[in-house]
Structures are given as structure tokens and as C-alpha cells.
Length: 371
Image 1 (cartoon, one colour):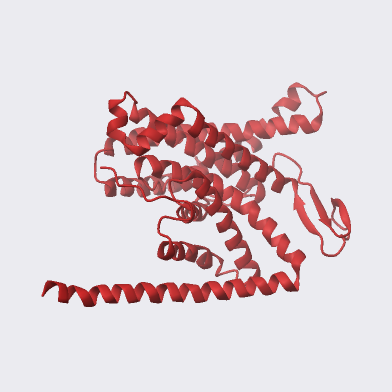
Image 2 (cartoon, rainbow, N blue to C red):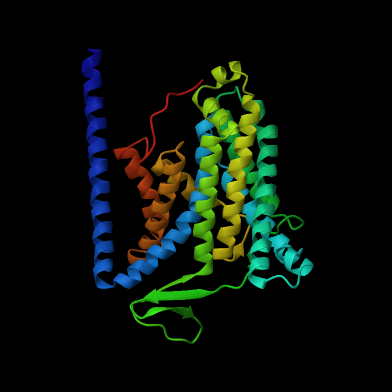
């Protein structure tokens, strides 16, 4: 009797899942059709949108790496991570606008080549934001998350949401960051170039560029190079260093790692700090690319980076990076060729499609739950 009662329910669940998959397959086919039409009708414009999507995707990647590292070790979705990204953006804003940190090397060594001094100053701003975010995340983990280490996971999740709201609205106070939207002062001058059938050249205001050319800026190059460099550094730390081995051991089996002499609490704190440092770097790069900072700026990029981590396979560093690039392309191409208001809906639909077809993500592996 019990089996007979369960059969209709199971059949309904299976049918619902099949209908859901078919529905999103139809939507996916429509999106692919629209993008295919755009590619054939104007290839250069399509490639320009791909470049814009890469710029956004590489920023998402740095945020997603923090999500996937923290979840891989403590199985916690740290919803405050996006707001740490916001703190990194504001840190760079104040170091540039009030303290002129980006000019420190040029002021000390005025005869030094201007471009090299500018690079050193910008790197210093990024490192300052990374350090502040790492310290903030380390403090949050010690105060808010560590006491709940053995508590039910829902307790830590609710605490993460509370920390997120606290950072946002504490930052909105006038004596902290301010509730206003602020124009971000870039630490260097923006330069753009074009490349296409007409050759390669510098793009300047008032100058007509050849048809079918693609425009890119030094901001795009900086974001791509910085993101790839930080990804490689993170991969080296995780795969080749002693602390990286400890991270992998704690992620695999925390009780056994403790028995082997690994200080799991310290490893978890370092993981939070390392992930937050990447978010701080992302905050600087995002603000340089889209020069406006405000106290809720971390919500949407944070959520999209989390979706990117799930799409790529949460717990997988290369997966998070791949998922972020896919998310950046989905958002940019949707806004360009389908509907700007629908770009977020289409981007977030990727999460539903992946969960229906491949729940573990593109590069994720099914991990056993740790108690």
C-alpha cells in the first residue's frame, strides 16, 4: 500500500523535472538562435560584446573564487562575501581620493618613468584593499562564524545574512562610507585601442575608426591580466604550499585533519582571509571598470559570482573561474541582443538549467557531506 501511494508522487516529480528541463531547453534554444542571428548579421559588434563580457566575467571570477574556497572547506555559503567586495571598492576609493596612495611612488621618485610609477601606485592600492578585506574577513570569521563551528549549518547561514546586512547599512552611515552614490576616481588615465580589418591603432575622441573594428582599453587588459595572475597564485597556494595542503585536508575530513596535527581553526580563518583578499582585488577592478561606488554595490555582483561558482562546480577553483566567464558572457549578450531588463533573469536561469541537468556543476564533483 505504501509503495502504491508513493508511485504517483514519484511519477509527478519525474514528469515535473522533465517538463522543467524541456522548458529551459526551449528558452536556451531561443537565446542561442538570437545570439546566432547577431553573430551572422554583425560579427564585429558581437565580438565587441564578447570582449565586454570577458571584462565582467573576470571580475566575477575573483569573487566566485572566494565563495568556492569557503564552501569547499566549511560548507558555508558566505553571503557577506559580496559586501566584503564592497568594502574593498570603498577602501580603494578613499586611498586614492583622500590619501593619493596611487601617487606615493611618483612623489618619492619624481624622476622615475611615469608609467612604471603609475603601475606601482595602482598595485599598492590593490594590495591595500586586499589587506583591509582580508583583515575584515578574518575578524568576522573569529567573531561571528567560529563560535558556530559545531552548530547546525542553518545557524551559520543566518549569521552570514545578518553580517551582510550589517556591513551594508553600517557602511551607509555618513561617518563611514555614506549612503550616496559616489563617482570613483581612477588611479590612471584610461586609454583605448581598436583592432580590425583596418589595422591597429589608438582610439581617441573625435577620431573615426575603421568599420568592423573592436575597441578595448587598458582597463580590460588590467582586469584580465590581474585576474589570471591571482588565479595562478591561488592555484599555487592550494596545490604547492603547506597551507594549501592543510586546506585540502580540512576540506576532505576535518576531524582526521585535526588528529594529524593540523590546526583546522587557523586554516579556516586563513581561507576566509584569502578569499576576502580576492574579493578586495575584485572590488578595485570593478570600480575602475564601472566608476561608481555605493553601499549596496556588492549585492548583485556577489549573487552572480555565487551563481557562477555553482554553475562551474562549487568547491572547484577552475570551475568557479569557468562559471564566472560564462556568467559574464550570458549577462552581456543578453543585455545586447535580447533585453536589458531581462539580462539578470537570463543569467540566473543558468543556475536552474545547471541544477536540473548537472546538479554538481560543470567541473564539480559530488562530495560527501561532513558532519
